[in-house]
Picture 1 (cartoon, rainbow, N blue to C red):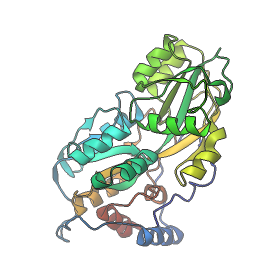
Picture 2: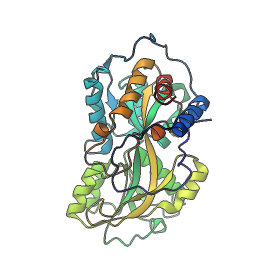
Picture 3: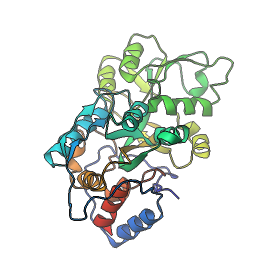
Length: 345
């Protein structure tokens, strides 16, 4: 049985701003942590370092992140800096990428030692490439919000208005693209006689295409707010489409991955609040990362939570004990498991 977020099968609404508090331990929390950790799957392939080593020091711990200007990249920059200042790594760099799928490929190839990825993309990657599935979760770091962005004067009112329209669906293999394909399929649009025309665009290129009127809608998955989208909303009147109607179908097909969340009013200038779909973002590591290093990274995530939240962030952050360990069924790295037991056991 995997480690499941206790809220993953129920709806919740995001507050406007997470204050980065680190929750105090309680007897209930300790029991919960122990219960999920003991039952979680883990493959013991990583050699254990000396028990007397309290913190590992790696030469390189580069973090595969996302496009510049996005929450992935901003978080990775903060994490990289903290890894070095805490003497966990001698060198760490936030690698600019096209997001989740590329991040996992870099991780497997050894070109990154840590990677940020959406939980649904991780699950699909592991199922499609079992021979390359030598990756483990360190923790759940923040919530991602699916944005379906339109010009305010668009006559699109729901997904049923998408036939024949033009959509920016995200960079190939990105979390936006993976989840967007599932949303289109759940809405019956992939096999529609007038299936929407899909343009595989990263969010920077997608925002430019929406600005120029080259597409009718843009899919974008990220933390809140997405800075380039904020800038676009200052230039153009925009609206967000409620696509939560497909949530029951998504949950039926892909259990324990998707939540109902809210993008609050004026998260983007002049844009009303909207219900949408949320997915957890995980920090992944190579399975051969030393146990002591994995343990040190997890402790860093929890003890320096406030310093690791990008200043622009308005979304729920998950750097708290009971949410860090909720990895949507993805197996924990043994060092991460040891860290959670040590801190809360």
